[in-house]
Length: 111
Image 1 (cartoon, one colour):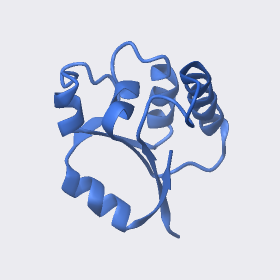
Image 2 (cartoon, one colour):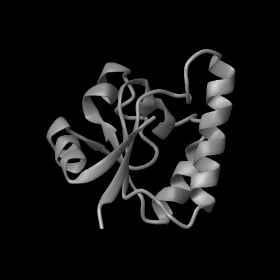
Image 3 (cartoon, helix red, strand yellow):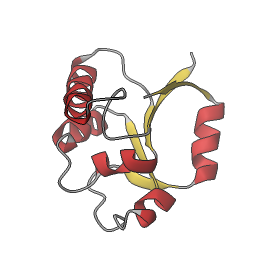
Image 4 (tube, one colour):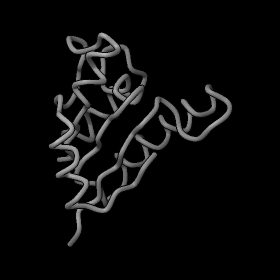
């Protein structure tokens, strides 16, 4: 069975209205937590790393997913760029090589 990896690239889903995108992302994580099927990993890149940091509106939902066995990985370079390395509140930092290896061995869903 192929693993699924969700690549989270921003703080919201879709393009356009930022408030709507944030609401959709929150709903996405809530429903993913309630779903029987789960991805093996969530990889957070670029502005998406903010979702795994202190103050994130979806932090509790991400913690629940981690408790349910989903690996949460945040790009260390991105965390450093946004000066959030010490604010990571769920999951763990990762490097590009680990992300590439994870993606090569999985089906990727880019959000």
